[in-house]
Amino acid sequence: MQNRAEDIAARLAKKFRRSAELAAKEGILPYKSEGGRWITSPYDGNSWWTGGFWPGLMWQLYTMTRDESFLQEARRCEAILTAELRTYRLLNHDVGFMYLLSTGADYKLTGDEQARTDTLHAASLLMGRFNPVGYIRAWNEKQKMGYAIIDCMMNLSLLFWASRQTEDPRFAKVARIHADTTLREFLRENGSVSHIIEFDPETGRRVQEIAGQGYCLGSSWSRGQSWGLYGFTLAYLNTGDERYLSAARRIADYFVAHIRPDGLTDCDFCQPAGEERIDNIAGACGACGLIELARATGNAAYQEAAERLLDGLIDHCCDWTEGSQGVLTHCTASYHDDGAGRHTNITYGDYFFTEAIAKLLGTDPMLWR
Ligand code: GLY
Image 1 (cartoon, helix red, strand yellow):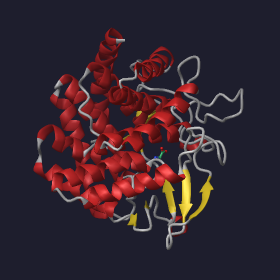
Image 2 (cartoon, helix red, strand yellow):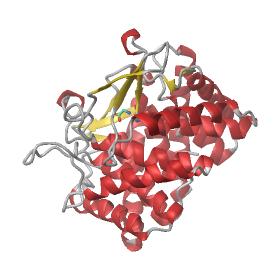
Image 3 (cartoon, helix red, strand yellow):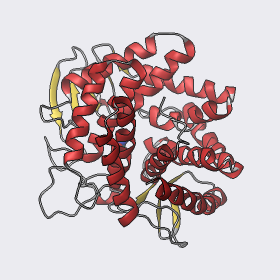
């Protein structure tokens, strides 16, 4: 796999060096590529939760190659994202995804003080979404005030980071309360996780599970499984709490049992037999979580499963042609919303694929902590 990873890293650098030039020329923050062009997010402008993945990808490529053009493209997009901190209105709990991979990455890799300040600003916004009855509020709509979602496990690292930076335990305390709620309310007996749980915002009482981006209520949306797998692994790495490691293992075992024979990942692990609906973002993110879990546990089976996923992506779903901008194909935003993107290229697929390759090469700067 090592030789393969080196070859893929060289191809990623070549393709994105060219496609970053196009993004810069157009002056946009890429969300997905279609018809040979980059398209910016059609939702919530540059406050959409995915905004950090393109700059994060640029930081990954910068650490792999030390090519300054990747740093410059990351900084160009960082300026777009820090303007959103001032706008504020559309930001939600996903400031973790957005700013760990942009301003947080900049501070981590260059020591830039303004980037550190901007990342602390984002962490304070995430703190402001904490409901002391026990969860971090996901979204902004009034009727969704009680919603918490599995994706938030990835955002918690921003709070753990802020506690280490400021030596103020409040951030980490909130992250642990939310992680404990997720452990108690989202993790199912069979090792799968729910996407959305609604709580009473006055009392914290569980109201109901809500069907989210997967096939149906009670099913197992694969990207949600990867958020849980990687998110609980990160919670363990941030705290050393064995309960989080055990949760990560249970989710990982469930995930690994559902990897397709070709190494690709169904959009939902409970989708009807014969339904060809793939989400390679889940596979790429799952591979990242599995590699970290293999390191944390010393269990080589997790590493082997991650490599099986990556082999599947490399064998079947990488677009290296010159006419397109992104690489990873067959990314699906949501099971029932083809308009949001079905079997297409989306930047967060490319981000996690590149992060996984960087982990194999030993260049991953670990932007999630
Ligand atoms: N965090 C939203 C998604 O995975 O689509």
